[in-house]
Image 1 (cartoon, rainbow, N blue to C red):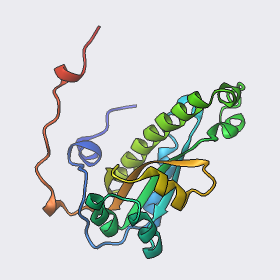
Image 2: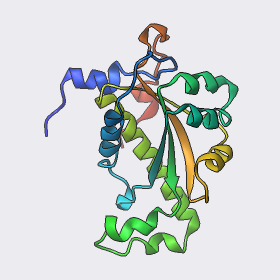
Image 3: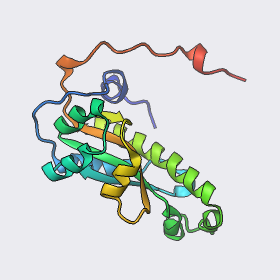
Image 4: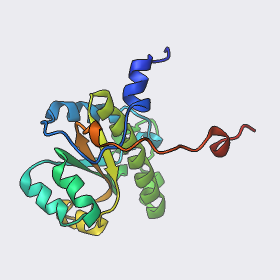
Length: 195
């Protein structure tokens, strides 16, 4: 494999931003579906693939979701063409005989609920990040956020309790005219060291 070009790096990283304001422009479902397919190609521990997603775009779905978000985030959710509820399957390990067939990985989690929960949350977070990159690769912009009541979201969208919300992700074509300057980032010497 070779290094990707500067145009691709800009689209994925250097020119990509977190958006709160959106263009009044429809988002094709196929682009989001392609990004989801890409997100499941990223590595997860034991290929566990715990991320589950609800894509909220109807007026009725938005109303249900708006009742669960903080006041500071309601306008972001209301105006985004699509809001993904990125969640995790607490019983993800039931799929491991198919997803990781060369060993009995299911048994790693069936008797250790704390490990299963930690693994599901961590790996759904990873997959959510892959999803963001997949969306950017499809030419879309994102606004990931917390600032919502997980228990309310779970009750409203995940009957039965098997799935639990992790974070929300607004998706669309961002309004670049309303962006602030990019905030500073920590320097390499502040975040890493070689040993």
